[in-house]
Length: 230
Image (cartoon, rainbow, N blue to C red; front, side):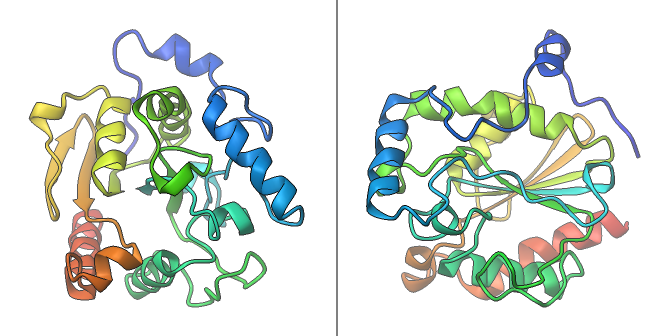
């Protein structure tokens, strides 16, 4: 089911805004400095904004978008693929495969043969932030890329947001009000033609502390699968 993703006043901006920052995006000075620090330390790593991962059938087939926080320094910042190289990806991709949104080939490296089906994966902030904590200005500066990414998907019906920052940035990218769509694990909100599902982030910290269990995470995607199939 197609639906317009641009809200009032946004269409012209989206048409001019690329959905991906350049490799040497200069917008956020702190993130630029951190990027250059890691390029000097690990020159063979990706060390650049991480692009949205698309399904094998392309952007026009995307019905589900998963939005995370930002690349992990030794995860996506190293490998160049969202949620690849650290624990969060182990749980995410296993869950996606369980519900038919990915094949079962994830091995935490970009050449592992992983494929997504009708699903794309992105981050609210495309560059790795120090201590995995982007500041408000960095989140705001990167939001136009998130808005443009959403606009690339004419068949989009559902978004899973991983963590409060990703959730709130996505709500704003969709033109919604945070008061009308507050973050909570397992929460659901309708924004225009998109159903928003929220979850705690699948980080090792959250799972180690039992704030998020595998069953809790799987339950969110079970609801998504039911929604899309319904």
